[in-house]
Length: 268
Image (cartoon, rainbow, N blue to C red):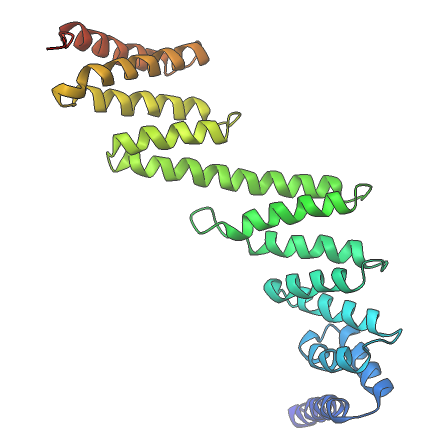
């Protein structure tokens, strides 16, 4: 029973290979296009793409060129080769800006960057590029039905950048590099003023400034104590109901006591 079945699949496979090789070698443009479309419709992207790459050259300047380029770009997208797909989709929009496929390709090109966007721990160049491309898409197509989808994707990518920025600052804190930690969290709050991490970031600024102040060399101690007390006041004013306010007040008491013990430096 198994041998006829194996023989059947072998014949089918050889026939498919034969069709592909015949189409690849053929100089008959219509035949090559017919086979390429058959592979495309069967989602055999790996076979459709080489045929369409030849057809791009052979159909340049003809009415068929637009469809060939469109399906070639979409085949790369469907293969999940998002780097090449982004290039070919964007190239389609540049080459055929008035095509009925242009809006779709412009969105998918931006979406490829989104798909290539890695976890927040890694380099976020593709994430930033995706945001830029999504925004550019909405400028080009202000009436697009995909505006809500774009905004949702942009929010997700901005959230990733926000988390990366916060975690980068947190690394300095964990390494007990409190000066760098204070600077990084202040930068974070300027960049992300409405962040859900803002309360925690301001508390970490206070903790970092407290550590720097109480462990400071004498020549800088008074100035750092005053800066840390300002950080406490900023936190208390911004989050008067915070569950962290008790800790903040305890740190402020230590800072205030240390400052009272400091004799102001007088000029010689």
